[in-house]
Length: 478
Image (cartoon, rainbow, N blue to C red):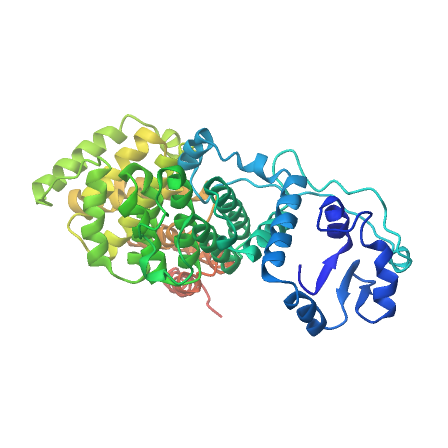
């Protein structure tokens, strides 16, 4: 466990065959008197007096014995918190996991609190009752990580049985998702990568992450996909776009198209973040075509006007309230498609692609059919802009600007693309002589939303634009 271990964990492990019968309590007084271990009064735990003592003891355990101890402790803790039951690694669960996607696991935490009397510990007394450390829905996050870490300390080479390899890879997926949900992406990467190692990839095989050394076998295909998706998302979060792209492409190259949408989304995000807009446009047009979006092969003026007219007729069947009543799209496949379309709309705009109005119309139609959500806002903004600029319909331009404002107002989460859309719609409405004072205050309110998720560039742009609008609106800037 390392240099320090909590009393609650010691008590949880009491039934393990690695722990002496009756626990270690009777040994504590002698170890404390000999200066080997000490007790912490602030955080009820026992720790080695010096890290070198722990290292010496650990290194003197024969490696095979050490691996057996880690395996026994990991599997025992997992059984106590019902880790396998929470994973449900079956064929049915695999199908469900493929639908849900790697970012949307809803994991709970145990609320149990256990008090330990340090004085009793000095005397070798620990309460014989084991605290309840598992929940009916999902095990507590720290214990999932602890159990999985014990298995990882033993290493993939300690397990040759295929069902066990899949089992432990599943534990690493669970622990990685837990860590990612808490924005601990370095820890998430450790678990995702180790999970892949249990399925077959070697630790030094980073350049061949999509190799054929066991990773994509039929019995672990879904699990391998989710581990790669987790790695791609975590690498993207820490700014390593190259490895994010590699892991995403490994999924795309090895699974059916309909199962690769999360990885397709990550690829688009990588291209957008790196400013590779030309590649994003080319890749995006092919991707939208495969997703059955109705986009003409050539962006001719007649094709654009025809798409605008058809989309206008489709929108006329809905009232303002019906369009702006945003929905949480439960179908994760459709949600991922909307995320892809949202990022692509921004990339097409930045590249000034002639396909921009066609893409905007296609996404608006998809949203009307499947549910308008915050990811739809950028497409409605593009549609309103071209309604005004191509058809000269000033009133409709204002109408669609208000639609976008209402959609963003109902947004459940703030993302980089929704914030970009929020900043863009303010600029767009200012050209239509929307009340400057109202827009200036909107930009001021946008700034803290940007800083909350680290998008400082958009936030600073919002502040500058707020000052500009205040100036043109006759406000006293002092």
